[in-house]
Each structure stands twice: as C-alpha cells, then as structure tokens.
Figure 1 (cartoon, rainbow, N blue to C red):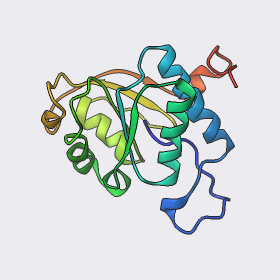
Figure 2: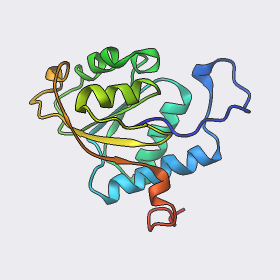
Figure 3: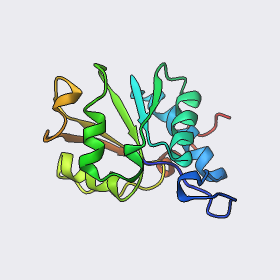
Length: 163
C-alpha cells in the first residue's frame, strides 16, 4: 500500500514529518474497510516511519477492524525495492503481509515482483501473491499481481458510505 494523500500546506519540519490531508485520511480509512470487506486484511503491517505512511497504516487498520499489529521500519522510508524486500524478509511467519510506503519505490517494486506496471497512486494497494513459504525467501522471488485497488474505484460504494 502506498501512503495516502499528504498535506503539503501543513506545518512540518522535514519530509519525514509531512502529515496526511483530509482526502488522505478519508482514503486510508476507505481502503481499510475495502480490504476488510474483500477478506484481504493482512496478518501484519510493516510501515515506513514517515508520518504520512504510519498514519495511513493506523487509519486503515482501525477503520477496517483488522486484527493485526503494525511494525514500523525506517528502511521503508528512503529505500529502493531491494531495501524494502530486505526489510520484508525479516517479517515473522504470517500468512499475509502488508507493506506501507512511498513512490517511486512502490511502483518499481510491483514491477520487479510481478512484471506488471502499476502506477501506485496515493492509498493504492497492489495485491501480490509470491508463492514463498517464508518471508525470508522473498528476495528474488517472482510474484503474480492479483489485483490493484485504488480509492477512486470505491467512491460511493458501501465502504465509502461508512463514517
């Protein structure tokens, strides 16, 4: 999942501290409900430590009622795909894992894992099946893009009419 829309007009000291704007807050919550409603809630979320990514993860988990922990990993903030995969390879033995981070890494990562080009817009979720037995085998693995989900696709849906 890419972080939701951030607020460039807010008062923040560094890029790392940039918060979400109102649209971003709405989209993060919406995608949390969408993933729960489609039985795609993860068993664990690993998020970048950047405020906008961390807040996206927290809002999605809360709005979707996901029963999972959120772990923060600074390596998801300014790493390329190799760094993200290295961080993910350290995940515990869970069935499904969600990574929350940033562009352009997220689009490149989806392409490297699946061979599919997906523009990871704000709050977009790429559902990828990797076929690995453990997350430590993720580096170098090939995956299949199951679907790409975007907040705009669910505007006015049952998930958008909640709260």
